Length: 460
Ligand code: UD1
Ligand code: CA
Image (cartoon, rainbow, N blue to C red; front, side, top):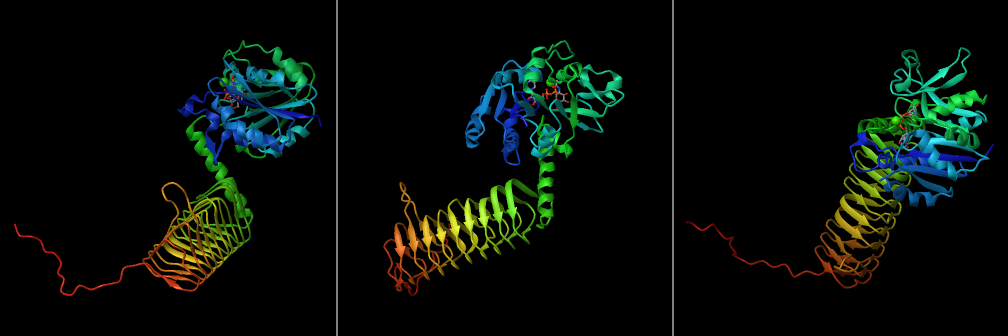
């Protein structure tokens, strides 16, 4: 097969989004529309990708520059100003494409196109390959005009179509594959004498026919692959379609979803066997849930690994953390970036953990803050314990040895080390290291003032 170039058209203004942000940077499933297209493009391993963006849309290359560098495929950004139609847009990319190749045209605002569909287009032959679809309501789209034998004659835009042509239900998705040298030649001879005064990319179909070059059509596996986004309503509708696809994928894999309509996956969610997910959960970035993991309602999990058998109770937030097996998390727990919990750890309600390692079977069950800490195994952290890791300028570490018992409402002022097996009396403010195995506490002695009376309200 010839090497592949991919041109992504992303110059449209997106007027109907009513937003300062270029349309293709609006997010679907947590990622800009055009990033979905770039990722799909990358999956085809093209020789290069060329993104055509619009005047004033500098935010597009800026937002994607970093991403482009992430994958090995060379990515060019080409400005199209003014915007004189889809044919004119592809023309802007041509100087960057070499002839002995095929060129695939994709759209930055058609985010859900799938690599498998594009692979089938590549396998369809060397001529011009159009991605088309039959729609119950074809209004607004270019129509595929065929002869009596079913051969493609060309594409007619709705605004230029006769009433008979408007009856055609097979529409042009816009996505097409062409031999690059031919595409160059066809684009050079485009005219704009049509209803919209634009250079139509679609006119190349009739040119191919005229030259006796085969024009073939391929249909996407799913209609949603060709859906474009022009408004917030279309964006929201496509988001729901994609979430349903994700939910069905999880169900097919054996995951139990309390309600497939109430889960949002914004990235990649990988689940082991017998995983259960209650309603309203959001998964972002790369999340891995081990066998038998249960995720309680309205939890948000981002870039995290949760090992087998762990139970996450409702309303928990887990971000960039690693959670071991058979842990109990939440309800209302917050694991911030850099948290590493070993097996059997319990983190209860209103406990915040940040940049800390907590070893096997340790527990912090209520109302605590554990930041920049190393906690041993078998430790019990009483309610209301706070590691005071910040002195107003710098962060310091707290080290807690194995089998320590920290009494409730304790402040551990870092840097500080609590020795193995130590006990800290409730209500202490610990500013110096505490030795192994001993009881350490810091409080004034309890006293009783005999006969003391509460103040009473003065009579006016
Ligand atoms: C185009 C097709 C039509 C097809 C429809 C599918 C042409 C002439 N018509 O219609 O057959 O059914 O898409 O949605 O190609 N763009 C640019 N620069 C431009 C013009 C457009 O980058 O100068 C980009 C837009 O950002 C968009 C895409 O091309 O991503 C399609 O443009 P749009 O105006 O939405 O397409 P239509 O003209 O409606
Ligand atoms: Ca148009």
